[in-house]
Length: 497
Image (cartoon, rainbow, N blue to C red; front, side):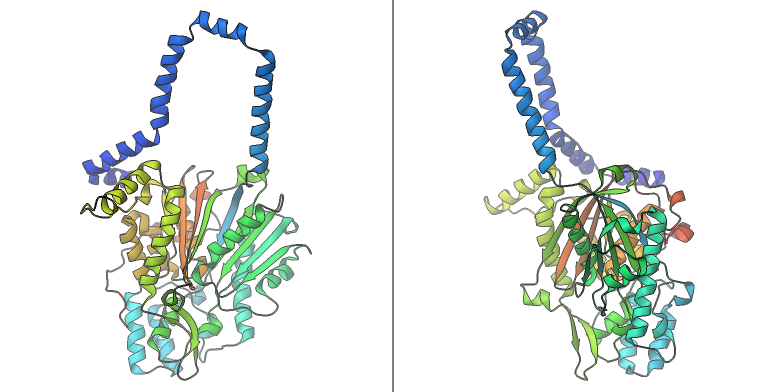
């Protein structure tokens, strides 16, 4: 890590140093101006004789009243402010090695089904070559058999494996009594059985009868952060409790057996994965929590027809069910990101970046100056970027639009390479990578961002409460192989329909 920092310093140009100096001066302007001013006033007007003079003339009743008012306002502030939300820990499920699905095995398995034409097989091969995936992603065990088994029973078994595997690891890490969990949220976009997935968790772990349980469906890859936002809002109402969040996506019933290219993409890109997260609003748990939730933000573009239809579950012309991914996906993601960061920027960016953006905006719009639009530097606001590993093209777009470096993108690209697109749980695998690589230090700011059907863009902003020691991360899915990363992924063109 030290070598990486030195290398980055060598590559920095004078403009970078000038920007950092400007950022420092603006961010600390209050201290740079007020401290000398107070010192001058103190030395000029509050000499020893002057201080004693003011002290003797001070009205005791007025002083008492001021202190009482100040104490009341402080107490009112602490009573009215929202409860702080902390993350004790999280766990990402790592399937058994028997479920590893190499690119060659996937293509061979697809061919043996007899469902696809030669053109469709060639298309799937092209997708796999350009996906940015490695050879160790995990597939559905029931679908990898010959012939594949698609049934509600197998889908339920798959969901139990993912959910219980993640929750068992989380409970082992946190050692929280399940009876203390007052809020439960489980999200799965496409597999939503009866009884619900949240009821499945209640039954397995014998949660208490008055637990607030929710099952979220149909919300796509950003459902994990939607669940997080819902849990935060509930924790600000409920007192002294824990919230358990489980994010997963089943593959068994979501296999598409037709030849519609826009619906074949999901077969190639989605892989097995699940994450479990434990939040709390107990002040006493702060010292043993990993992170504090600073902000959560949601942006919904569903009012626009193009955005709404870019990811759509439907039947093809032969009545085969699948999920269609439109060519408009990248443009919808771009629009959603632009709207999202416009709202997020004023909340998280330092005042120096906001001033630069304002000056640029006034120059372009008011004075019609021919200058390039200024894109705020979110590297000034965040230390780590946990971007949903939805696909190579999406990661490329975000890297370009946000001006991120290879180091910032490494956790997301390595997650895509090692685990593939695990839907709503993917941003947690990215955060797990940061922890395993020893990147998380106390005080670091982490930005989780994910896109999902609808079309939605959601964010969570965390502050690390302690330095994460990789040596103590026994249940981290990366630990046994983190020394093998990062790997070099060949650069290829984007997928073309």
